[in-house]
View 1 (cartoon, rainbow, N blue to C red):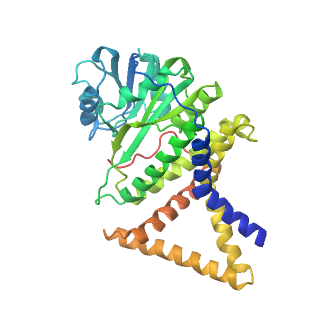
View 2 (cartoon, rainbow, N blue to C red):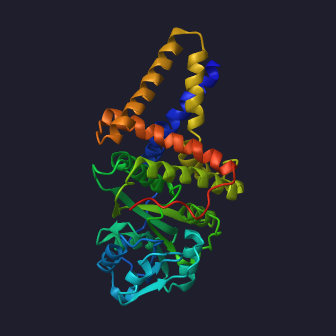
Length: 375
């Protein structure tokens, strides 16, 4: 039991601390740079917009203000399935191309339809609630000067907003992810791009199976499978609001985990067993995190069962940690956020969602028609 306990502790430590330290060290010792230069390919900005009436106008105006030649930027709004005024608002803007059919078939199907209608040499995928810095697109595409680069993702910044329950947790999480992905890029390729800000060479785009939920992860793995890199551009910045509630954040992380197992099944020959650095990196960054609830549960139960004062003390520390998460939950519901209580809460919420996502996958998987978070 002791060996299993310490293995569980190591798993959790490696997932959240050790892997980050390992990648950062290797990136420092042997960085692989990207040969960047100012290039201006024709770009199609694809805005995925299912029922995005509250934000679509701001998104289009933001897109029109990007620092990029007007004649080389096509803006395409994929509003398939929308039942609100998303498509009507988008059509108010001359030059903005709108795709809208009444049937909702999921984001992956909408992106495939948009890619088939696009004129660009580069597809630039975006969510409707993501706002870009003026120079973001120009900074992204300069990476395509390097012929080894097949895709580029930018840095997501979460707005500070005390009115949104998930803001502090998401902000900390995405700051952590940004540094990890920057280090992964210096080693070769990120484990997965972020669909809110993801540019892909047209020649490497492969139609996404409509059932696929993680469109960005699918495209990343396909590009890497073809021998190209997917890199992270720190200076290409996007901004968006956090989930309004912890409930929305819970379902978001549930979807990530459940759809992650779908990706693992789809690319099992590439990833299992891990024969390349990228495969090991992906499993360390993603799979071990999705599965982290299991060693957390094992460590908790085993520390209670092993007859030793050391393990009783470790058990007591875990009880105290989870108690702070419970206290953080009730305080957050009252609009009070104490960082000492909030971050244990966010950690437990994330792992609870990952556990639920695991069982959801084996009960039939995540539907591509997922529950939208409130804007």
